[in-house]
Amino acid sequence: MKRLLTIVLFTLLIGNGALGQSDGLTMIPDDYPVTDSMFKGNYDKIISGEITSLDKAWFTNDTLKQTLVFELYTDYHRLEIYHFYNNDIPEELINKIELYVSKGKFNNIFDTATRKQKQTFFSGFLSSGKKIDQKYFTTYKGFKLGDNQEKAITIYGTPDKHSTFKNIEKYEWTFTGDYALKESKTNVKTNKPLAKNSWGFEVIMFFRKDKLIDMILSNDIP
Image (tube, rainbow, N blue to C red; front, side):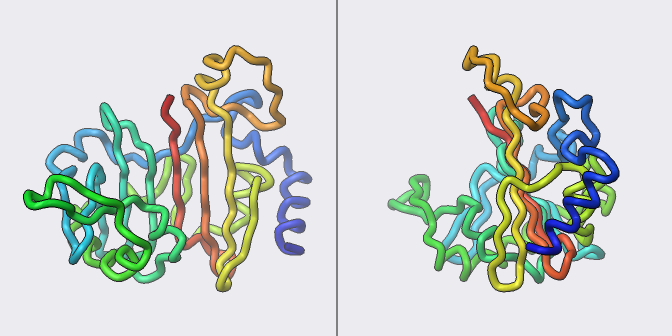
């Protein structure tokens, strides 16, 4: 916690970090340069042991030893994006990804996989990912695995939540979407910029020894 406060103080000295890459009122949700066309043909059901991946596109890079997973909705809307090292995946990240077990004779009805099933069979999906270039593993805001906490706070500001478990620090930021605010027809005031052209945007980062090891980007839907 002391380290977090030090980083926040440094950020305040160089300017309001929450407004980084924004106009002060809105901020553009971050994303990866993976194009919608890359999802085509890479969006099928994948099976690993007892569990199944649905509505997700998996991409890997052997040099980086990293994986990107896109959970998709209508028109390739990116509900969740997971980015992690193949050999260093926090249990919490695996637990958050929705995976399934086949139910029924024809394998077209599914139940949600248990945490134990996901922890046991998750690694089997990594070899199924489509291999893509390293350039796709850096976000538009310049984040990549290995970045430090200072960079994250400079861009996003003080985390809304901060916790530590098994020597992994978890930072969370949540931004109200401007679409959601307009829809609610309220005059809600926030001390953070609104997520532009969005129903809501969330960032979760996992750090070990001040280095980013995994990240989750979430985009709400109406």
